[in-house]
Length: 243
Image 1 (cartoon, one colour):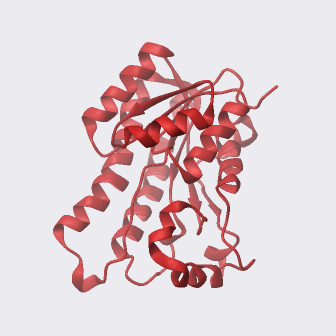
Image 2 (cartoon, one colour; image 1 turned 135 degrees about the vertical axis):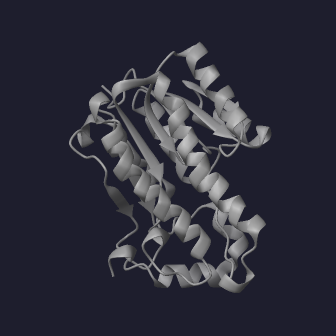
């Protein structure tokens, strides 16, 4: 029997990388999964890759109308949510003296505002005893150069978990943060090989993580294996944040 048999999960921004690997694993473990993505072509490919027990809903997690449409589909097709992985997020390297209002708003609108409303709008469908976890980052506690806006946005996500677990305690809904280190996904490709090697040098094992290593950690937070785990930040980073 799968660890998520009969469960309904929503995973935002699950067209590639860590979130797509998580969606695949959740389906293998018995869940029905709703995934989102901004680009219809990428969403269609992800749905095909997952293969079964999945519905793709095109949308941007930073756009409230798109979130409403997502949850309308979930309500119509399944009528409930047991697991939410608020995965959508973005970041860019910008020197403090070059941060613009537009750039700041872009990151905070998706990473902070988008995460808040992704969770809030899911709650009417959420089963008591369910699991919410959000995509954090080791950048939220580390001082990486030129990453101040992104890092601050992830620190805000960490704060959400602490307060929301109290807000939702009467419903026994757990709220945690899954904070990856450097994971070898296509999103890193534009940074080039030199930057990738720099990232590798910061990881004790000398190599980046794999999306599947994030997926297994996500499964832990989603399943009853973590029934007494609430409000934590789970670092899946090969030890980078600890040294």
